[in-house]
Image (cartoon, rainbow, N blue to C red; front, side, top):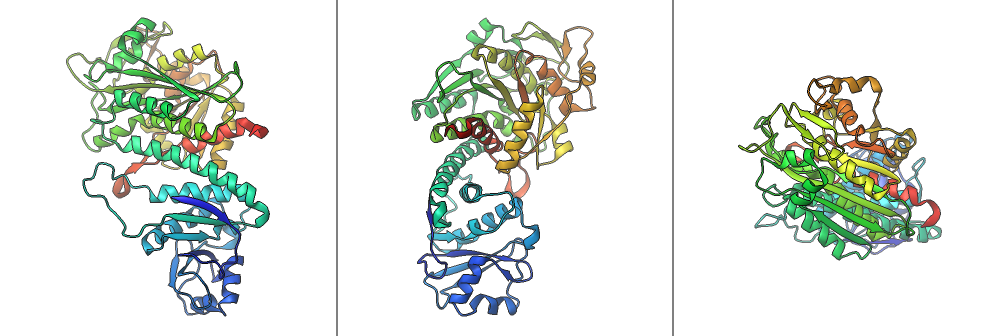
Length: 498
């Protein structure tokens, strides 16, 4: 897909399709009014006849509009003008991309970035046009012998902007394409089955990413190296699988030499059966998505490198399977983490925190500015927040605020949850320094409490993405979240140095 920016009148532009917004109660947007005037009331006439009201989700496709140079015009409903917001803008962009792609038009020019949107500038609207359009057109058909092909797919989209905004639009297009590429990598990895996307495969993907970007270098630790470092918690999870575990590190050097890096830690359980504490069989196939935290780290590093961000970033990915076998960890086992703290494993399905705790200890070697871990960690987070927001917990309120703001800007939101000392006692064990679960109450919080014990020496935040990393049902598939949030977080940290 190719994206460009233009500044042309809607009825004068020669294109496969012109996309215009219509508000509820048949109110034309400014660009639609210009089009209507040039075509002598074509649009107002159709709207008066009841073809469309302008409600959110409505679309109306017209062919060969008289008085215009385009082959088609697509009207997209935006809802009530005074209620038009970022979510409705993204919905309108998504509807437009889907309809135009199926219309037979190979190119389109969108006037949606010209819509008034409180608190959002041209950069944001153009970048979202790119990110959302690419997301809508993504197909998880890599392993199908026969692809679901459209005979004449959409290949080019132009964003119409004011001529004075051409430079900022160009920047938005470049950033949007980089972020979309990162999201697409995360989605592609997430959608792969566990028999292909193994810990070894993730390590290969990290090496492939580094091969394409000279700012990135990769190291991969095997079982022997992890054992030497004392990573007993991580290796205890890997015991039940014949697939060897890997600890993957990617170092992106875009900032000044010696500057402390932002470290991103992604949970990489490439398939999670629950181990001896085996999960119910229903929907267990979706446990291939338990490596979406790892996928988001790879996607964010890809976006970071393609935008050439002027900062240092490290990605750490503990990767393993969690399977039952005669050699698997058992409930009641006690393991020793890299930090020296001992853990009573009361539930082998609470494995994510076991691999993350050793990864968090490993992060200390990078002398991090901040550390953010990303994990499909708890079903409790899905119950608490559903599929709309990731859970956010942190030992530093300023860091949490940065992530929250980045999520709001990127339309990839998180919600701040408490990490109070009172919850820590739920992890008490009679036989070890701590248990790996804290009971039914506050499961998301106690999981973060567990991780916080390994992040005391630096500023740290935890993103529980169990509810947002993939969609269930008919449109099952990885979402690529929270690549957009993480990339925006890094962009914000660059400030005016870009």
